[in-house]
Length: 258
Image 1 (spheres, rainbow, N blue to C red):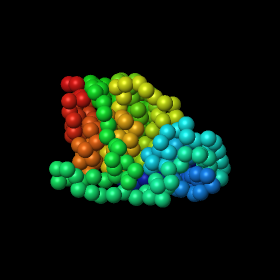
Image 2: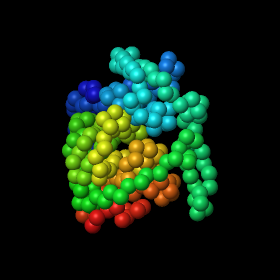
Image 3: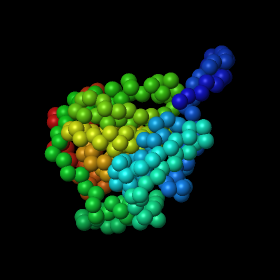
Image 4: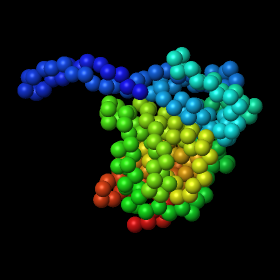
């Protein structure tokens, strides 16, 4: 969603003129579970069911989308109300907390308490570098709101070279939650899937993707040091700096076919 505004465009030549430009909408949206407020997003107000679903599963409050018995979205008021009989009470009480512990090799682990002993991606999938590099440009082409405003992030899930879904938002975490919310809701079982984002590969994005069981995450930019450490522990392949002529593979390069 976008909004038109008048801007004053100035040139170094001294020319000044008024032009109409589009900016993405930024809107507060509050998610409640069983009448309890959980989180308020500042987001692009689209695909709010997916945003809420992806966030709640990513935070461990729910384990799958079918546990939602009812979901009601009020776009005008900016609310998403969810009813479920399956909310994880421990995850609810530790919501938003992360725990830093020492890793086996002297590194670090940075998990939600609920994920610490269970989170690891097991996959034998291998994807060609060509498909991953092309995916970056397919994602850019499919990012309509970015083309109109230049001010949002996009995330997508691919199966080999096919784009399954793309979602955009002013926040890269929100865009990831929307995409993964769709993924959980659709019950995707296709193999050789991977996740592509326009944003930085941070530890929290890495955790969201790993929790969904997706073995490869890629971006036109690079990862943080903690994201690389987590990817090593969680068996996730990170591919960064996607360019027409190649990319950097930070972890588990055996999954990428050259």
